[in-house]
Length: 262
Length: 347
Ligand SMILES: Nc1ncnc2c1ncn2[C@@H]1O[C@H](COP(=O)(O)OP(=O)(O)O)[C@@H](O)[C@H]1O
Ligand SMILES: [Mg+2]
Image 1 (cartoon, chains in turn brown, yellow):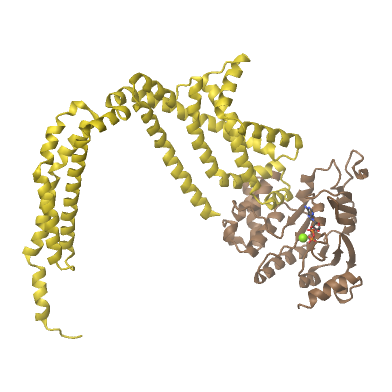
Image 2: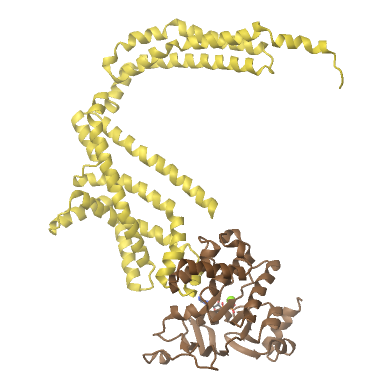
């Protein structure tokens, strides 16, 4: 359905009170397989949305559609009013505003921590080396790695690598941050340092979509929780309320499985 | 253990200092040195194989091989045995001296044996060296061969520079998202890799001249080698690029970098590191394959060696070419091996 590709101009900028991210009828097919079957979601500025759901329910696919790593099959995604799915939209400009942190860190192994952080600002925003360095040192300090600036990723623990990855995304001064199971690959004792960093970020007012299985984080930091299943959002509301009183049978089933291990 | 009676240890200690016993070891060393008297003679015999001017070597050689050094060497070994049987093992100096004498004795005997062998086989060896290491031919042809080899190196290095660039370009087309580019690159790579290099060299050189494009032989050689080797190196680059986890490209793109920026600053630096060893191997192959452009009349090493062989009527110039190649290729191969190990550890 090419209807969203009509028109010559991408829609205009965000107006006051409008959502930071607006997803309308998002469908994604991989071949014949429907990974997303019509997602509708609005994320307000400064909101922290936690996304929960069983493996394969389409959580990663949704995040990847938001910053254009996957192309939506149908539907629209607006970020600050700009339609990501529009043909005329410069996806690189959108990505400057949308930071993403991955489960597998994906740090650049041939670069030191500080050069991981400065690379994109230097090449994309064209700022000076000094400016980039100052900014990177500040960000590494903020994620508690001020002393690791010259370390290569291979010499950092998983938790440290993930925090560098967060600093790297922040260096582009994004308006939105997407986190895709960023603690799932970490040893248990390293999870907290990363979650703490994310909590600090939330306190500063960053708009965040966080896919996670950390229910403590969802309850304490999340403003809102959405539960996804088979490519659809089946529940959406206050985290504590959903934990205590899940409405959808799928949600009940999921939480009973998770919570039985606690 | 306290207060061991001094007398008990006094006896072996005095034996240890007995000059007669370490005297055997000293005698062994002296005899060993005498045994080396055969050296000038043996060297002369060796040289006489390479040049008839050194016929006198036979006379000298006989003197060298005469009884004295042989007897001296044998004595050196015998004395060393006697010394070792008597010297205390704690007497490291004495043992060392005896071992030295023994070694000299063995070397002395080996030299005489080698000298006798060469003297005996002199005619055959001479025929062999006249074909493969003829001194006159070496003197006459080495500058030509060396100059040819310089051309070989120049051809290889200039071609490699183009190949590294052109090969990367083909690799980028091969993995492009645009089907047309991918198909074009795939066809190019398959066609080129499916043809003998010598055929490509001929087609390019003669084909171009029929088209009225008259390249110099050097240029034609560079073009042919570049066209051919780029296909192989493109595949190596591609394998290197594809070996980098796709999360690297995605992380770079998610930061707002363009596809080309992500390639340039994130994927390629990692990929190139991985393909340095296989690319270096290709470069070594290329260096050897430059010999094929001799067939379009390029005066490189092989061509010069062949010409030398024709004129001097022996194989010496080609052996010279071979030695020049090995001088470059063997260290290069060792170097690649070292790099491979270093990179394997680094990853
Ligand atoms: N590139 C792809 N090609 C084919 N199928 C895919 C691809 N990416 C994801 N999928 C499928 O889409 C579904 C949703 O995947 P994903 O979004 O990764 O789920 P989640 O992150 O919730 O575990 C899964 O069934 C997965 O196998
Ligand atoms: Mg996922």
